Amino acid sequence: MTAISPEASPEATPLRLTSLAHGGGCGCKLAPAVLQSILMGMPATAGFANLMVGTDTSDDAAVWRLNDTQALVATTDFFMPVVDDPFEFGRIAATNALSDVYAMGGTPILALAIVGMPIDKLAPETIRAILEGGASVCAAAGIPVAGGHSIDSVEPIYGLVALGLVHPDKVLTNRTARAGDVLILTKALGVGVLSAAFKQQTIAPEGYAALIASTTQLNSVGRELGDMPGIHAVTDVTGFGLLGHALEICRGAGLSAEIATDPPLLPTVEGLARAGIRTGASTRNWASYGDSVRLPDDLPDWRRDLLTDPQTSGGLLIAVAESEAQGVLDLVWSRGFAAAAVVGRLRDGPPEIHVQA
Image (cartoon, rainbow, N blue to C red):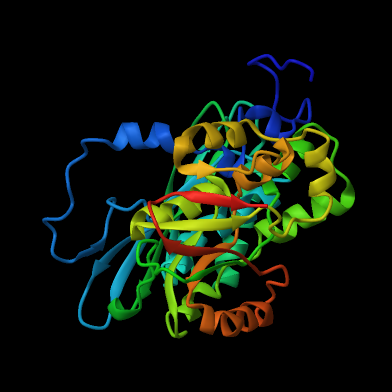
Protein backbone atom coordinates (compact mmCIF):
# COMPACT_ATOMS: atom_id res chain seq x y z
CA MET A 1 0.00 0.00 0.00
CA THR A 2 1.28 3.47 -0.84
CA ALA A 3 2.25 5.43 2.25
CA ILE A 4 0.21 8.56 2.89
CA SER A 5 1.77 11.57 4.51
CA PRO A 6 -0.19 13.55 7.11
CA GLU A 7 -0.54 16.39 4.60
CA ALA A 8 -2.14 14.21 1.93
CA SER A 9 -5.78 14.75 1.09
CA PRO A 10 -8.07 11.83 2.03
CA GLU A 11 -9.28 11.78 -1.56
CA ALA A 12 -5.75 11.64 -3.02
CA THR A 13 -5.20 7.90 -2.54
CA PRO A 14 -8.09 5.45 -2.11
CA LEU A 15 -7.70 3.48 1.10
CA ARG A 16 -8.97 0.09 2.12
CA LEU A 17 -10.78 0.60 5.41
CA THR A 18 -9.32 -2.66 6.68
CA SER A 19 -5.80 -1.39 6.01
CA LEU A 20 -6.32 1.26 8.70
CA ALA A 21 -7.04 -1.28 11.44
CA HIS A 22 -4.84 -3.85 13.16
CA GLY A 23 -7.87 -6.13 13.55
CA GLY A 24 -11.47 -6.27 12.44
CA GLY A 25 -14.95 -7.10 13.65
CA CYS A 26 -15.35 -9.21 16.77
CA GLY A 27 -11.82 -10.50 16.22
CA CYS A 28 -10.80 -7.24 17.93
CA LYS A 29 -12.22 -8.45 21.25
CA LEU A 30 -9.85 -9.11 24.10
CA ALA A 31 -9.19 -12.82 24.57
CA PRO A 32 -11.39 -14.40 27.27
CA ALA A 33 -8.49 -15.00 29.67
CA VAL A 34 -7.20 -11.44 29.26
CA LEU A 35 -10.66 -9.98 29.86
CA GLN A 36 -11.14 -12.14 32.93
CA SER A 37 -7.85 -10.96 34.42
CA ILE A 38 -8.79 -7.32 33.82
CA LEU A 39 -12.23 -7.63 35.40
CA MET A 40 -10.99 -9.60 38.40
CA GLY A 41 -11.63 -7.64 41.56
CA MET A 42 -14.13 -5.23 40.02
CA PRO A 43 -16.81 -4.06 42.47
CA ALA A 44 -19.70 -6.50 42.88
CA THR A 45 -23.07 -5.49 41.49
CA ALA A 46 -25.15 -7.70 43.78
CA GLY A 47 -26.15 -4.74 45.96
CA PHE A 48 -28.49 -3.30 43.33
CA ALA A 49 -31.87 -4.96 43.77
CA ASN A 50 -33.21 -3.96 40.34
CA LEU A 51 -30.13 -5.15 38.44
CA MET A 52 -31.33 -8.47 37.06
CA VAL A 53 -28.22 -9.16 34.95
CA GLY A 54 -24.84 -7.54 35.52
CA THR A 55 -21.21 -8.49 34.99
CA ASP A 56 -21.20 -11.66 37.10
CA THR A 57 -21.83 -14.20 34.32
CA SER A 58 -20.35 -12.60 31.18
CA ASP A 59 -23.81 -12.24 29.70
CA ASP A 60 -24.61 -10.31 26.53
CA ALA A 61 -26.20 -7.23 28.08
CA ALA A 62 -27.17 -5.65 31.38
CA VAL A 63 -30.82 -5.85 32.44
CA TRP A 64 -32.46 -3.42 34.87
CA ARG A 65 -35.99 -4.00 36.21
CA LEU A 66 -38.12 -0.90 35.64
CA ASN A 67 -41.43 -2.23 36.98
CA ASP A 68 -43.45 -5.44 37.10
CA THR A 69 -43.86 -5.63 33.33
CA GLN A 70 -40.76 -3.95 31.89
CA ALA A 71 -37.01 -4.35 32.18
CA LEU A 72 -34.41 -2.28 30.34
CA VAL A 73 -31.78 -4.16 28.30
CA ALA A 74 -28.60 -2.10 27.82
CA THR A 75 -25.47 -2.96 25.85
CA THR A 76 -22.72 -1.44 23.77
CA ASP A 77 -20.64 -2.96 20.99
CA PHE A 78 -18.16 -1.45 18.55
CA PHE A 79 -15.18 -2.53 16.50
CA MET A 80 -12.88 -1.80 13.58
CA PRO A 81 -13.70 -2.59 9.93
CA VAL A 82 -14.13 -6.15 8.78
CA VAL A 83 -14.80 -5.06 5.17
CA ASP A 84 -13.79 -2.07 3.05
CA ASP A 85 -17.21 -0.92 1.90
CA PRO A 86 -18.13 1.81 4.43
CA PHE A 87 -21.88 1.29 4.15
CA GLU A 88 -21.53 -2.46 4.72
CA PHE A 89 -19.16 -1.87 7.64
CA GLY A 90 -21.83 0.29 9.25
CA ARG A 91 -24.49 -2.35 8.65
CA ILE A 92 -22.38 -5.13 10.12
CA ALA A 93 -21.43 -3.16 13.24
CA ALA A 94 -25.02 -2.12 13.92
CA THR A 95 -26.39 -5.63 13.37
CA ASN A 96 -23.81 -7.01 15.77
CA ALA A 97 -24.65 -4.45 18.48
CA LEU A 98 -28.40 -5.07 18.31
CA SER A 99 -27.80 -8.81 18.60
CA ASP A 100 -27.04 -8.45 22.31
CA VAL A 101 -30.53 -7.08 22.94
CA TYR A 102 -32.13 -9.90 20.98
CA ALA A 103 -30.01 -12.49 22.79
CA MET A 104 -31.58 -11.37 26.08
CA GLY A 105 -35.07 -11.78 24.63
CA GLY A 106 -35.50 -8.02 24.27
CA THR A 107 -36.93 -5.71 21.64
CA PRO A 108 -34.68 -2.73 20.75
CA ILE A 109 -36.13 0.74 21.33
CA LEU A 110 -33.28 3.09 20.38
CA ALA A 111 -29.57 3.30 19.66
CA LEU A 112 -26.72 5.77 20.12
CA ALA A 113 -23.78 5.83 17.70
CA ILE A 114 -20.16 5.36 18.83
CA VAL A 115 -17.80 6.85 16.25
CA GLY A 116 -14.01 7.08 16.20
CA MET A 117 -12.45 8.00 12.85
CA PRO A 118 -9.01 9.05 11.52
CA ILE A 119 -10.27 12.27 10.00
CA ASP A 120 -6.93 12.98 8.34
CA LYS A 121 -7.27 9.79 6.28
CA LEU A 122 -10.97 9.30 5.57
CA ALA A 123 -13.16 11.61 3.54
CA PRO A 124 -16.34 12.92 5.21
CA GLU A 125 -18.35 11.04 2.58
CA THR A 126 -16.80 7.75 3.70
CA ILE A 127 -17.57 8.39 7.36
CA ARG A 128 -21.10 9.45 6.46
CA ALA A 129 -21.60 6.20 4.55
CA ILE A 130 -20.61 4.20 7.65
CA LEU A 131 -23.21 6.05 9.72
CA GLU A 132 -25.81 5.61 7.00
CA GLY A 133 -25.17 1.86 6.96
CA GLY A 134 -25.72 1.64 10.71
CA ALA A 135 -28.83 3.80 10.53
CA SER A 136 -30.29 1.59 7.78
CA VAL A 137 -30.05 -1.46 10.04
CA CYS A 138 -31.62 0.41 12.94
CA ALA A 139 -34.45 1.50 10.64
CA ALA A 140 -34.96 -2.15 9.64
CA ALA A 141 -35.15 -2.98 13.35
CA GLY A 142 -37.74 -0.22 13.81
CA ILE A 143 -35.63 2.09 15.98
CA PRO A 144 -33.88 5.46 15.63
CA VAL A 145 -30.24 6.34 16.09
CA ALA A 146 -31.09 9.03 18.61
CA GLY A 147 -27.64 10.47 19.26
CA GLY A 148 -24.09 9.41 19.95
CA HIS A 149 -20.51 10.54 20.39
CA SER A 150 -17.57 10.92 18.00
CA ILE A 151 -13.80 11.32 18.38
CA ASP A 152 -10.76 11.62 16.12
CA SER A 153 -8.95 8.28 16.46
CA VAL A 154 -6.02 6.50 14.84
CA GLU A 155 -8.16 3.57 13.62
CA PRO A 156 -11.75 3.63 12.35
CA ILE A 157 -14.19 2.48 15.02
CA TYR A 158 -17.97 2.28 14.80
CA GLY A 159 -20.72 0.70 16.85
CA LEU A 160 -23.80 1.36 18.95
CA VAL A 161 -25.14 1.69 22.41
CA ALA A 162 -28.33 -0.36 22.08
CA LEU A 163 -31.27 -0.18 24.47
CA GLY A 164 -34.29 -2.47 24.54
CA LEU A 165 -37.20 -3.66 26.63
CA VAL A 166 -38.20 -7.11 27.84
CA HIS A 167 -40.71 -8.49 30.32
CA PRO A 168 -38.84 -9.32 33.55
CA ASP A 169 -40.23 -12.86 33.47
CA LYS A 170 -38.97 -13.44 29.91
CA VAL A 171 -35.34 -12.35 30.24
CA LEU A 172 -33.05 -14.86 28.52
CA THR A 173 -29.60 -15.35 30.06
CA ASN A 174 -26.58 -17.55 29.43
CA ARG A 175 -26.56 -19.12 32.90
CA THR A 176 -29.75 -21.16 33.29
CA ALA A 177 -29.24 -24.14 30.97
CA ARG A 178 -30.20 -27.60 32.19
CA ALA A 179 -28.69 -31.04 31.84
CA GLY A 180 -30.18 -32.78 28.81
CA ASP A 181 -30.66 -29.56 26.83
CA VAL A 182 -29.52 -29.56 23.24
CA LEU A 183 -27.64 -26.59 21.81
CA ILE A 184 -29.00 -24.99 18.63
CA LEU A 185 -26.85 -22.56 16.63
CA THR A 186 -28.82 -20.31 14.29
CA LYS A 187 -26.06 -19.17 11.89
CA ALA A 188 -23.28 -21.04 10.14
CA LEU A 189 -19.69 -20.48 11.28
CA GLY A 190 -16.71 -19.09 9.42
CA VAL A 191 -16.99 -15.31 9.53
CA GLY A 192 -13.49 -14.97 10.93
CA VAL A 193 -11.99 -17.15 8.22
CA LEU A 194 -13.83 -15.21 5.52
CA SER A 195 -12.75 -11.87 6.98
CA ALA A 196 -9.13 -13.06 7.07
CA ALA A 197 -9.40 -14.17 3.44
CA PHE A 198 -10.91 -10.79 2.56
CA LYS A 199 -8.03 -8.94 4.17
CA GLN A 200 -5.58 -11.15 2.26
CA GLN A 201 -7.58 -10.56 -0.94
CA THR A 202 -8.10 -14.29 -1.46
CA ILE A 203 -11.86 -14.38 -0.89
CA ALA A 204 -14.15 -15.64 -3.66
CA PRO A 205 -17.28 -13.68 -4.65
CA GLU A 206 -19.46 -16.44 -3.19
CA GLY A 207 -17.60 -16.20 0.11
CA TYR A 208 -17.87 -12.41 0.25
CA ALA A 209 -21.60 -12.56 -0.44
CA ALA A 210 -22.00 -15.11 2.35
CA LEU A 211 -19.96 -12.92 4.71
CA ILE A 212 -22.18 -9.89 4.12
CA ALA A 213 -25.44 -11.86 4.24
CA SER A 214 -24.60 -13.56 7.53
CA THR A 215 -23.21 -10.53 9.37
CA THR A 216 -26.12 -8.26 8.39
CA GLN A 217 -28.90 -10.72 9.29
CA LEU A 218 -30.60 -9.40 12.41
CA ASN A 219 -31.04 -11.91 15.25
CA SER A 220 -34.54 -10.51 15.80
CA VAL A 221 -35.94 -14.02 16.31
CA GLY A 222 -34.43 -13.73 19.80
CA ARG A 223 -37.33 -11.58 21.00
CA GLU A 224 -39.69 -14.49 20.21
CA LEU A 225 -37.74 -17.08 22.17
CA GLY A 226 -38.99 -15.94 25.57
CA ASP A 227 -42.45 -17.23 24.62
CA MET A 228 -41.17 -20.63 23.49
CA PRO A 229 -41.45 -23.62 25.87
CA GLY A 230 -38.32 -25.41 26.99
CA ILE A 231 -35.80 -22.66 26.25
CA HIS A 232 -33.48 -22.36 29.24
CA ALA A 233 -30.52 -20.24 28.11
CA VAL A 234 -29.44 -18.11 25.13
CA THR A 235 -26.32 -16.23 24.09
CA ASP A 236 -24.94 -14.99 20.79
CA VAL A 237 -21.75 -16.39 19.32
CA THR A 238 -19.31 -13.58 18.61
CA GLY A 239 -15.62 -12.95 19.26
CA PHE A 240 -14.89 -15.92 21.55
CA GLY A 241 -16.01 -18.48 18.97
CA LEU A 242 -18.49 -21.34 19.36
CA LEU A 243 -16.40 -23.07 22.02
CA GLY A 244 -15.86 -19.90 24.04
CA HIS A 245 -19.52 -18.93 24.20
CA ALA A 246 -20.63 -22.51 24.83
CA LEU A 247 -18.14 -22.58 27.70
CA GLU A 248 -19.81 -19.50 29.20
CA ILE A 249 -23.12 -21.39 29.16
CA CYS A 250 -21.43 -24.36 30.85
CA ARG A 251 -19.86 -22.21 33.56
CA GLY A 252 -23.09 -20.32 34.19
CA ALA A 253 -25.06 -23.54 34.75
CA GLY A 254 -22.30 -25.74 36.18
CA LEU A 255 -22.65 -28.28 33.37
CA SER A 256 -20.54 -30.03 30.76
CA ALA A 257 -21.19 -29.87 27.03
CA GLU A 258 -20.61 -32.13 24.08
CA ILE A 259 -19.98 -30.15 20.86
CA ALA A 260 -19.87 -31.66 17.38
CA THR A 261 -16.74 -31.28 15.27
CA ASP A 262 -18.77 -30.42 12.17
CA PRO A 263 -21.12 -27.47 12.82
CA PRO A 264 -22.66 -25.77 9.77
CA LEU A 265 -20.19 -23.63 7.81
CA LEU A 266 -20.63 -20.68 5.48
CA PRO A 267 -19.87 -21.26 1.77
CA THR A 268 -16.15 -21.60 0.84
CA VAL A 269 -15.07 -21.63 4.51
CA GLU A 270 -13.95 -25.25 4.68
CA GLY A 271 -11.61 -24.88 1.72
CA LEU A 272 -10.09 -21.73 3.15
CA ALA A 273 -9.65 -23.30 6.57
CA ARG A 274 -8.03 -26.39 5.07
CA ALA A 275 -5.62 -24.03 3.30
CA GLY A 276 -4.58 -22.54 6.64
CA ILE A 277 -6.60 -19.29 6.57
CA ARG A 278 -7.45 -18.24 10.11
CA THR A 279 -7.42 -15.20 12.39
CA GLY A 280 -5.05 -14.39 15.21
CA ALA A 281 -8.09 -14.20 17.49
CA SER A 282 -8.81 -17.87 16.81
CA THR A 283 -5.42 -18.81 18.23
CA ARG A 284 -5.86 -16.47 21.21
CA ASN A 285 -9.29 -17.95 21.90
CA TRP A 286 -7.91 -21.49 21.98
CA ALA A 287 -5.12 -20.48 24.35
CA SER A 288 -7.69 -18.90 26.68
CA TYR A 289 -9.80 -22.04 27.12
CA GLY A 290 -7.04 -23.85 29.00
CA ASP A 291 -8.01 -27.35 30.16
CA SER A 292 -11.72 -26.59 29.90
CA VAL A 293 -11.97 -27.93 26.34
CA ARG A 294 -11.09 -31.52 25.40
CA LEU A 295 -10.46 -32.38 21.75
CA PRO A 296 -10.25 -35.75 19.98
CA ASP A 297 -6.61 -36.75 19.49
CA ASP A 298 -6.99 -36.89 15.71
CA LEU A 299 -8.89 -33.62 15.22
CA PRO A 300 -7.27 -31.62 12.38
CA ASP A 301 -6.06 -28.15 13.32
CA TRP A 302 -8.35 -26.55 10.74
CA ARG A 303 -11.43 -28.01 12.44
CA ARG A 304 -10.26 -26.72 15.81
CA ASP A 305 -9.72 -23.30 14.20
CA LEU A 306 -13.34 -23.23 13.03
CA LEU A 307 -14.63 -24.08 16.51
CA THR A 308 -12.59 -21.16 17.92
CA ASP A 309 -13.21 -18.85 14.95
CA PRO A 310 -14.40 -15.37 16.08
CA GLN A 311 -17.84 -14.64 14.70
CA THR A 312 -18.67 -11.04 13.91
CA SER A 313 -22.46 -10.69 14.24
CA GLY A 314 -22.80 -14.45 14.70
CA GLY A 315 -25.85 -16.54 15.43
CA LEU A 316 -27.73 -17.28 18.63
CA LEU A 317 -26.75 -20.32 20.69
CA ILE A 318 -29.90 -21.70 22.30
CA ALA A 319 -30.07 -24.28 25.12
CA VAL A 320 -33.46 -25.97 24.85
CA ALA A 321 -35.06 -29.13 26.20
CA GLU A 322 -34.67 -31.89 23.61
CA SER A 323 -38.44 -32.40 23.46
CA GLU A 324 -38.90 -28.79 22.30
CA ALA A 325 -35.89 -28.54 19.98
CA GLN A 326 -37.80 -29.26 16.78
CA GLY A 327 -40.26 -26.45 17.51
CA VAL A 328 -37.37 -24.01 17.99
CA LEU A 329 -35.72 -25.17 14.77
CA ASP A 330 -39.00 -24.76 12.90
CA LEU A 331 -39.33 -21.20 14.23
CA VAL A 332 -35.80 -20.07 13.38
CA TRP A 333 -35.93 -21.73 9.95
CA SER A 334 -39.17 -19.87 9.24
CA ARG A 335 -37.43 -16.59 10.16
CA GLY A 336 -34.75 -17.10 7.52
CA PHE A 337 -32.02 -18.91 9.45
CA ALA A 338 -31.68 -21.77 7.00
CA ALA A 339 -28.38 -23.04 8.46
CA ALA A 340 -29.72 -23.45 12.02
CA ALA A 341 -28.84 -26.84 13.48
CA VAL A 342 -28.23 -28.77 16.67
CA VAL A 343 -24.50 -28.53 17.45
CA GLY A 344 -24.25 -30.00 20.92
CA ARG A 345 -25.77 -31.21 24.16
CA LEU A 346 -25.45 -30.38 27.87
CA ARG A 347 -25.00 -32.97 30.59
CA ASP A 348 -24.11 -33.23 34.25
CA GLY A 349 -20.43 -32.73 34.94
CA PRO A 350 -17.80 -30.06 35.56
CA PRO A 351 -18.00 -26.89 33.41
CA GLU A 352 -16.04 -28.06 30.42
CA ILE A 353 -16.53 -29.00 26.78
CA HIS A 354 -15.85 -32.33 25.10
CA VAL A 355 -15.63 -32.02 21.33
CA GLN A 356 -17.14 -35.15 19.78
CA ALA A 357 -15.68 -36.74 16.65
